Amino acid sequence: MISVLALLFLAYHSFKSRNESEIEKPLIIVNGIIAPSLSKINGHMTYINENNCMNCHISAASFDEIKEIAAPSIPHMYRENCNSCHFIKE
Image (cartoon, rainbow, N blue to C red):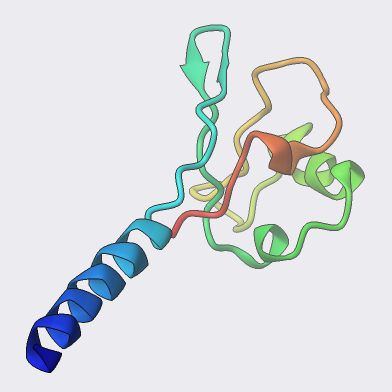
């Protein structure tokens, strides 16, 4: 009897922890495009404010001399709270 209870507890705990790790982020669609995730660069890891985002993304700032790595321009009107649609990639 105890082994059956232990097995049920283990199955429940496994199922619960799997579902908790799969928390769904909202699907935000603007102009027919799903809001992209943010890459794991330093500027994205800690959200400060929208001005911080705009410093790079309004001007498509480049991170190297040959412009191979550049912040993409924002393809939509300015909106407050960038993190309400964009999330850090896992």
